[in-house]
Length: 385
Image (cartoon, rainbow, N blue to C red; front, top):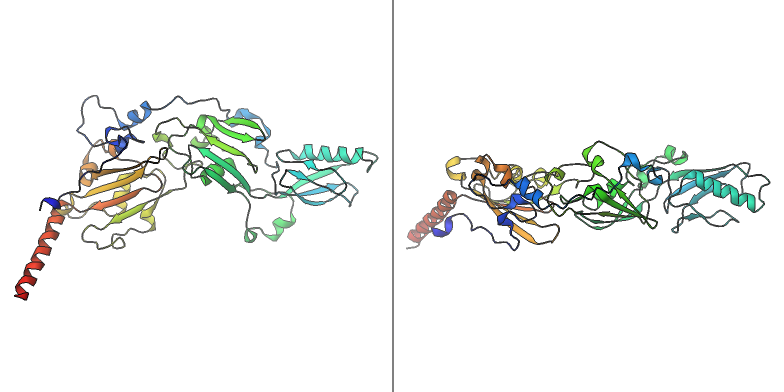
């Protein structure tokens, strides 16, 4: 019966048991001693100072915030007063220009409509197509998707495509109207498309690389809900989210820059269930809001509760990975012991995308199952004699 007890605690390469893993909540549960630091304090000890050199949206005052700046693939309507030769609809080329008949290419990427109108009018006048400077109107009809590179302290550093709409979404009235408004080709959506910010992100100085210029942005007000301003993105933009080198508990919550949720891999084959379906491990248990903690997943996967005498000794194993180094880790918790501690928050890890959780039966249930098997074998032995 020696092998019927709880599973042996897993080993790890990183020093997670001492509180020096990606989040201090991974550390081994110990008896509370006077002077012990909380997980929040242990996490904060590793933090590098925030750069704080990013400019807040309220103080930026830049063309970055213009909603009608153009990007390759955008569809524009150009109208010139009293003229049908040059007026028409044009697509912004991959090099960021539009080409009207008989005119040189006009650079439009990242520029305001008024400056484009002035350039077109000046070119028409200089080529003697008009005696006086004509009145020119340039209007955005439809936005194209934009490919943006996102790297740094996000869960999935990669190039993402944001914006644009599928054909069924665009109704005929909107197609006939001028102007376009989309909430998908924005900085926040680019970051979320790259998996969202990691808990170690430094939001005080997020870099936006555009046309050879680096803009440093303070995205903390956007995350905190004190500023709803967002930045329209252009094809070819690059976003870099720096890291503070520490786990920040305050970033583990839903927000405009956070992951849309957490997908978990769950296994609960504890008695009396013979599979995950009887344990009610459905979509709601596997897909949880960002900021969910281990105890919530334990309850959601039916690994807690039931008959106290037989189920109180259940154990759960969480398998995760350090999102910075990629090193896997595994920790074990005794379910009832964790639930009944007053300082449970210090040892209750936040769940990260792709985490796996396995629920193990208590010692009493294991012994009972072994005894049941031995009993069946005894009956068979008697029957075969």
